[in-house]
Image (cartoon, rainbow, N blue to C red; front, side, top):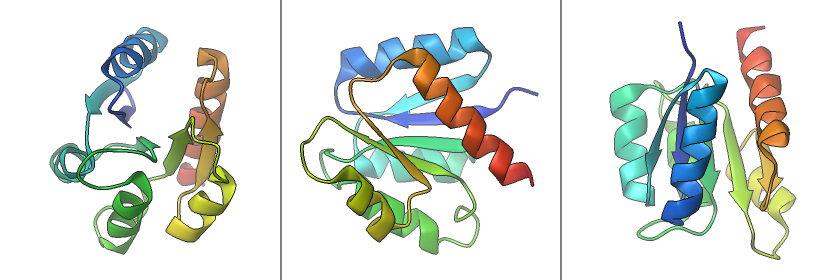
Length: 124
């Protein structure tokens, strides 16, 4: 069965391109454009992993992470924060409880390596 990946980014072009690449790689990838939609989709579709932009409308990625990590049904889903912002991404990931982080721009291979690493860790 294909692993489900939720990608959350308000940059629609990047979102669509990344979803297309993830689907071609063999994942079932779907997307959201803001923090509230991310929470709703996570609850409805129970993804195996979430790629979450830090800077989002309605609610930041680190706020979404904190909410997901407190939810009994969702807290085990690995979350990788992504951002092009200059602020310390590693620190945001640690403070929010995210499992990892990846600065933008990233290559598809780099992203897939990160996804595989976190999916493998989840199944141990």
